[in-house]
Image (cartoon, rainbow, N blue to C red; front, top):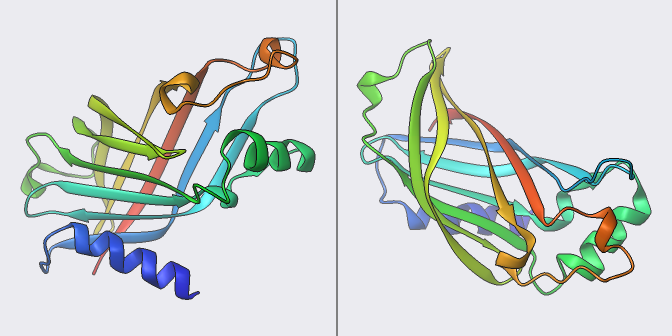
Length: 182
């Protein structure tokens, strides 16, 4: 619990303090690196912390790597020990700014926007520009969702030759955050 509170404080410290913050601790983040004809390589994390400053469109999300759940326990173990090295790199962090963000422009209908930012995973930070996202207002909450792809090699993760044909070099990432005003 202390770690979660500490991580939340870290996230809120990266965004200017204001009364216009929306937050979640139950955001959803999933990824898939499957190859056809082989076992599904996919995981989901349903405890991602995310915060949005509606004054300037700054957004940050933090996921504990060990919180990703796979269908296969052995696959989860291999992911944490051999690929993500989650003991050494326990967090995945995205920090960015939504382009042309105006809270007054959001409604119950979906608004397509883009976000520029950086993703840190496995000790490597990669700049990601113009990622498409969807925003909407739902019962005074802000919903942010979207998807994008990254390459495993961008984060200096080596796939052993023995399983190289069973894992995709390209990883599809999907996210969904229901942010509540704080």
